[in-house]
Amino acid sequence: MREALPGSQYQWIIPYLWVLPGLAYLLFFWGYPSLYAVWLSFTDANLGSESSRFVGLVNYKRILQDPLFWISLKNTGVLLAASVVLEVSLGLGVAVHIHGCGRARQAFLTTVLLLPWLFSELVSALTWRWIFHEPLGLLNAFLRYLGFPGVPWLSRPDTAMASLVVVSLWQGIGISAMVILAALKAIPWRLLDLASLDGAVGWRRIWHVFLPQLRGVLALDSLLVAIKSLGAFTLVFALTGGGPGYATEILATYVYRLSFFHYELGYASAVGICLASLFLVLTLLVVLLPRRTPVYGYERMK
Image (cartoon, rainbow, N blue to C red; front, side, top):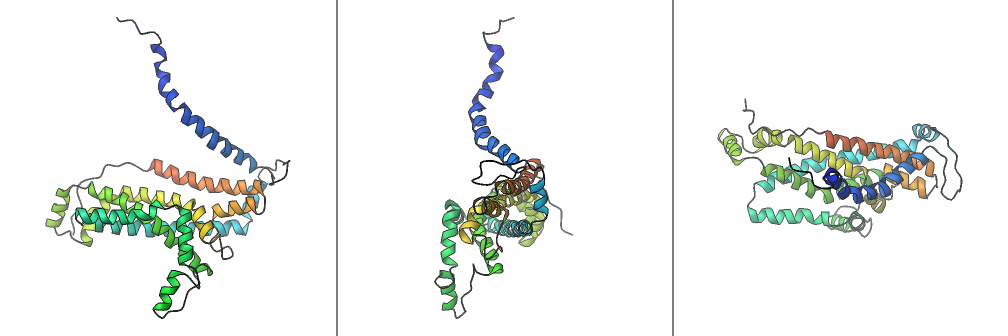
């Protein structure tokens, strides 16, 4: 038998050495702040105070009795649900349309769809804030040109939330469409030809061919859009500031308000842990989503 090379028994440690810098970064910049936030959630820490007391579950009990927390949670759910339903459904429709176009038109439409994604959320929010501006905004100027009165888009609760959804769609629909389009292109053309011969065209093709093949991709895209909506702090803070009143206050902006307006770090950390728990649940759903191989067939129409 050949003798083992010197030090070969330590070869197993080399892959771990390669990931050690990244692991150290995560532990220092994410692990330690996360553990410290958990600790703060069990204290009465205040910004500017040098001492804090351990109060146990007091902050979490306060959450159950805090009406603003539940308003923020409801607004977060509304923004999340509207973004998921509209972004995924419209992304599917756009992807199906692009899938039927020629190469040149596909390239042009793909470029147009991805342009909003290139801008940061802050730039997008400030741009749309000017568009939605009540007396001088571009949208109200267009409405007045058509003979309609201007609408206070960001000053009324219902229109303010609708404005948030519109901006979220404007920035995110392109990514959803590209994800779904990539899955559409993976469907064999022979399956599409067979479906056409069997009469599956138009909506029938979408219902009987596309949707069964895209089930896993649509579920994954829905979860990713939901995760994005949970963390839409920049968009909400720059566009509406959580107003009018608390009509667009979400959990992310509520944590910021508690921390830097009311200086209640302990309670803000408890609310932040609740928000992080929602992130964790959605992330686990993404990880646990079954990776089923698509069945290249379709159920024949009755």
